[in-house]
Structure formats: C-alpha cells, structure tokens
Amino acid sequence: MPIINRIAEFHDEITAWRRDFHEHPELLYDVHRTAGKVEELLKSFGCDEVVSGIGKTGVVGIIKGNKDSSGKVIGLRADMDALPIHEQTDKPYASKTPGKMHACGHDGHTAMLLGAAKYLAETRNFDGTVAVIFQPAEEGGAGGKAMVDDGMMDRFGIQEVFGMHNFPGIPVGEFAIREGGIMAAADMWNIKVVGVDSHAAMPHKSVDPIVVASHIVLALQSIVARNVDPVQSAVVSTTIINGGSAHNIIPMNVELAGTVRALDPDVRLQVKQRLISIAETVAAGFGAKAEVDYRDGYPVTMNAADQTAFATDVAKKLVGDERVDDNTEPSLGGEDFSFMSNARPGAFIFVGNGDTAGLHQDQYDFNDEIIPYGCSYWAQLVETAMPNS
Image (cartoon, rainbow, N blue to C red; front, side):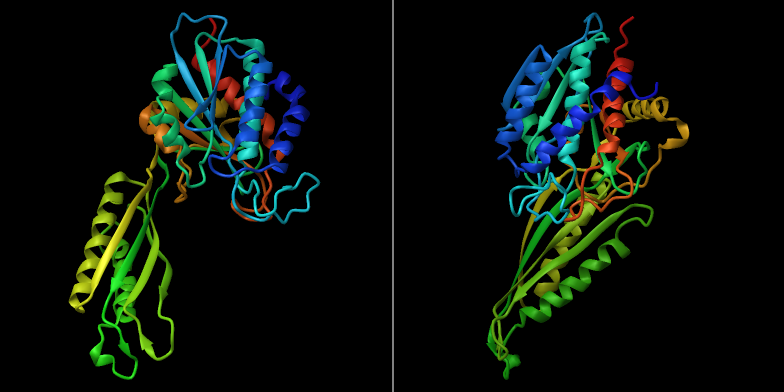
C-alpha cells in the first residue's frame, strides 16, 4: 500500500490549506476562522454530516462508506490551535499575527486530515462510518476533554479513535509508535510557603520561607530518585521561585511552581501524593506552612494493544517494516488526545517531520513533504479497518 495516487494529485491543494492555516494562527478555543474553513471544506467534499460547536469550537465531519453493513465507526482526530510564540521563520506564509504561530504543526495535522477526508468522501471505498474530528485547545486548554464531555463519542457512535502528531528528528516517510504510555501525564503544582517575616539582621525572629522553600525544592528531587521504581519514568521539575522584595527583609511568603510528568497512572498518583506530603512535612519541620495547589492536567496517552498493533500494521504496509519504529521511546510531553483514548480504545502515532526545528520553537515549521504520508495513513487505516468486501 504505497502513497495513494489520488492523494498525491492534490498534494499542492492540501499544502495551500496548510499554509493558509499557518498564516492565520489562533489560540485555544478561539479558532473561529480555522474551524470555519474546516467546516466549509468538509461540506464542499460532500460529507454526510458536518457539525460545529462541539467542545465550544470543535468540528466533526461524518463520512459513510459505500456499505454500512459492518456498523463500525472510527474516529480520526486532528488539533487546530496554535501557540503564543512570535514566529521567526521568515517564510512567505509566516504568521500574520504577532505573538501567535503554529509552532507545533497543528496546521499540518488539520490539513492532512482534511486531505484524507476529501479522498474518503470521494471514494467511499469502505464498509462503515468515519468521523473526522477537528479539535480546539490542545495547547493547555483540554479541548479533547471538552469534546468528549460534550457527548461526541456517544453522539456519533465512535467505537475507536486514532491520533497522529508530527515529530521533528524522525525522517520523512517514517512512523513511530508503541503500545502503552506513549505520551506523559502532565500535571501542574504551586506551593505557597508561609513563614514569619523579619528584618534580615534579625533572622532568629523569622521563620525564613526562602530557606524552607530551598529545602522543599531539593527534597522533591528525592521522589524520582528514591520513591519511583527505577524501571518507570517520571519527572518532577520546579520551574518558578518567587519571593522577597528587598535586600534587608526576610519575606513572609515564597511561591514555588512546577510540573510533574509520568507515563503510568499509578506512578502519577504516587508522585502527586509524595509531592504534597514532602512539601507539607518539610515546611512543618521548620515551623512554617506549605499550601499545596496540585492540578491534574492531561492524563497519560495510552495506546491500546489491539489498536496499536493495527495502526502499526497499516503504517508498515504504507512505508515498509524498516521505516516504522513499533517500540519507540515515549515522550514526556503531554497530549490531550489522552481524553479521547480514555473514552474509547485507540492509538496515537508519530509521523516523521524530518530534520527541522523542534516543536514549540520559534523557528519551527511543519514539513509539507510529509503530507502524502499522513493523508495516506489516514485513508488506508479506514479502508483496512472497514474493508468494502
């Protein structure tokens, strides 16, 4: 199953869509222009149903095959939102909005799924139904959760769901996937250390929150080193320390903040419990108080066994066994496709973006050379899962 010829024929058209999205980046749920164009294109393809406003600004297109005897419904998901980054690429289609850019390739994800939708609506060479899902607010807004909470899975009868993300450093024409946790849970925490302020020349009259906070920061590093099983993966990072306003004053408060990443739900819970306990007990040991605000973020993106094996087989038939890494290293980045794959069994795959700048960098650009691979993967996944025979 090589690149589909019909998809290759409208590569330039898909590229034009992608570059238009790139020129007009939108953030979080405020993707009205992007969603509007997606809706317009899906209707022009002749989708059987196009529904907007799911999860605030999400769009779903329904395409029925030439047959519907299987009763099978598969969801394919792409994200639409950009990032609050000022683009530095100098491309002719660079962002026209200062401070916003498609630095993660969601413009390409949207365009590739649109390309697949055009092909599938034209050929309909499958037995069942495909739901093409265009999601807002992946970048920190939990748009995937919003669409699930809005009843998307039940409304369209989605039984399985698949996602894809470009990955710089993986060569063009290659894919990477793994069963189990492929992207990490991404939680956030804030700790307010409350002590007693005093003049810096009289530290004995204080409970110094800077000293207490320093001990907490160091103690948190013991969680991964001494509590998490060494064969598991976790990260505890302190990324913000704020406190004090003058050279000669010991402040009353210091604020810490950071993130926790884990690839296993049990490890995630273990790290959360240890972080809260350490912060509170270390502070108490100094006579201070730690007020911990721990916020669960995106869950672990778990690839189900059957769907992963199937997606791997489709990718291998597309590009060859040697060009698919079926036991790739997981990423400790977060991904809210996890909410969809928690609601229905699914698989998330990486498609190579080539030797480009990294994701979330101001020099990044989606590689248009990978469009035929992504579109063909989507199309062949549908036709293989729901054969018209």
